[in-house]
Image 1 (cartoon, rainbow, N blue to C red):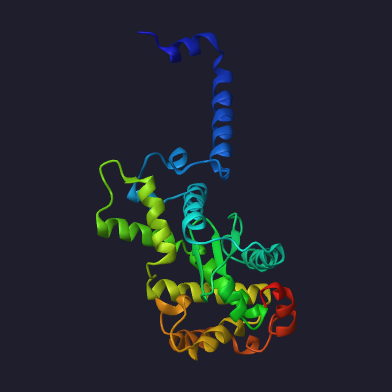
Image 2 (image 1 turned 90 degrees about the vertical axis):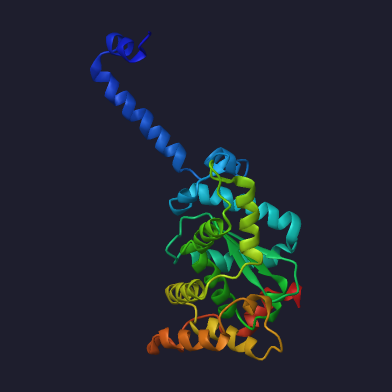
Length: 282
């Protein structure tokens, strides 16, 4: 039987073998750590079957690849992007400012405004955040917008979608011998983003994460509190709150967490600049 390793050791001086192997491994690590472009499919990164255990150790590249597939489904079947460039650039500007102060600043976040009258914002794995036109119209100032976007970033930072997907897969028995089919994983990701409620623990974790991001960024921590107070008067809970803990409980928790010396500080509370930035929606 032909032994290539014996042939290699005979033909190549040993002192060149280990540097060569090291170089090959270094190149492989660089390639594998790069974020995939939109042309990459889930199957090319995680194979035809997604192991349930793999969800717990999913790399950033794998998370982004799966998030891209979920995002394609959401935008092709559920929502349509809002076409105004000024509005989209504004939301991205606020989002990028917040991401820089989060615990996952290197993830390639994508902030998107979608056409919908409901007061809603949601996110999926891989850094995809969605804000409805209805939510932008309901806001009074930029600090409130930053609070809601910060909350969604908090979900992504804590990998809540991944943790929830794993729980649902186990509960529904969706994993076969080869793992979870990637198509099932994508459809479940859409369901998690749009319809399945997150746990109260996840919501409070995202609120805490948002508050930390707001303080680090320099936004007023009152923005998120104001937003929840604003929604208390709604006759029926907006989509954003329909599956969430009670607003009054979240307000009380946030007020306890806000440092007393920072409660009345921070930018973004002036409504006039905000209204100017979203003028096409008014």
